[in-house]
Image: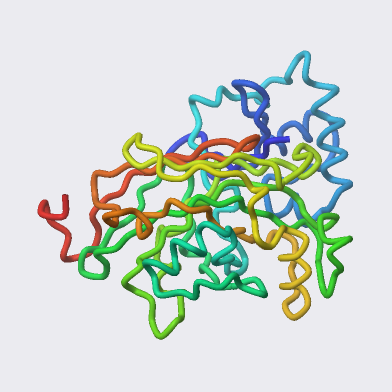
Length: 312
């Protein structure tokens, strides 16, 4: 299933839906029509566990030939939000997780040329998340080196504490797309959270695809363009540390809980790695895609007291 969080109008509340072709099926209203309890928020659905997904699948199968009144909405009439508009915890980011990105980073960002022997972990706060189409803010007073990174995001479904690599994928709820926006000139003494955790620096969406529909999360093409020009293209098979390794490593010391998000790293082609280097500026448009999940598109806009027409 492709699960979304959507809004039917500017003042309407955020609701949980399922994409069915050109329609979005409201999960809670489908449950009401079927006489079963289904939630209206993504985190609530995740918290309920696999049995709730089974109930939802059954209700969809029974209603698919004739959607009850008020249940189905044209996708074009809706605004998609981040699938989890406000994560409960910081997003776990993984740095230097594609071999070619390790090489380009060592040339341009003063990181080691040697491959990491353990996952490199940082975080992005919940306030950094934005949904599809929302603007990425560029504050010229803070950064002149705003960069892009397309990533596969993993959403946890059940609590994982000291899990083995063999069992790790059993804890995954689904997958999504994330752009790890980074202010390269905001790294501080090797610490990345201010560089990567500013407001709007985690574009996320357009949906969460449930884990059962992704046969192999390590065989997905992913790409990113800036103003229509391709900057990144790779496949998740090239991850240095695969998803089971990431889950096992993080959960060895930090409990992963339902709804937690892991952004699994980016391939080569970031702005800092271009020759000459390239950065995002107001007026640019960033588009990112992961195979089997979807595409997100985000304009870059000026923000902050120093913003002016000179930014472009």
